[in-house]
Image 1 (tube, helix red, strand yellow):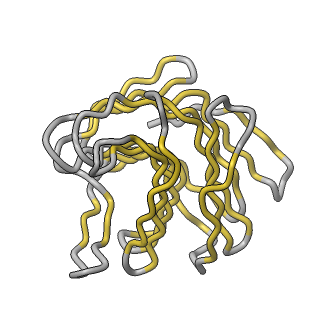
Image 2 (image 1 turned 180 degrees about the vertical axis):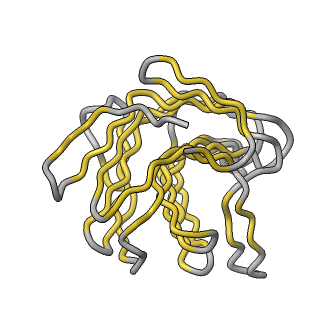
Length: 188
């Protein structure tokens, strides 16, 4: 399923999305303003999950990004993002929004790609990153009491100047409660 305006292409196990300029998901903790209009390809998911993907993006503008995204509604979601920082560096950014957004910069990424993992067990969400797809490191662990059903998938954002193309490679979605591990591209 697809939410928001964007251009996309699926080839094999690669989803390419072009984010429209001026689009993002963020609830400003200073003034409470809500931006919730970035492109989002997802599948409804009940309960616990693990999703993992290699995210690649050529960053040009502040906050350009591609993210794994678990969405309940416009003010309740979790994002594991590969983003251009406001100081010109690319990094793993985690955002937990439970009414307002708690935005946190993580490790600096030296290239144009990083593996991200977003997982949920009960009310606990964890975000990990990897430079090689084999060895993962924790970036964030938090507890938020969201609904059992969430839309889980990939978000592409470009809050500032230009349309931005983000790629999601080798998307894996696992449902621990069933033990079923699937490699399934996100379909729109």
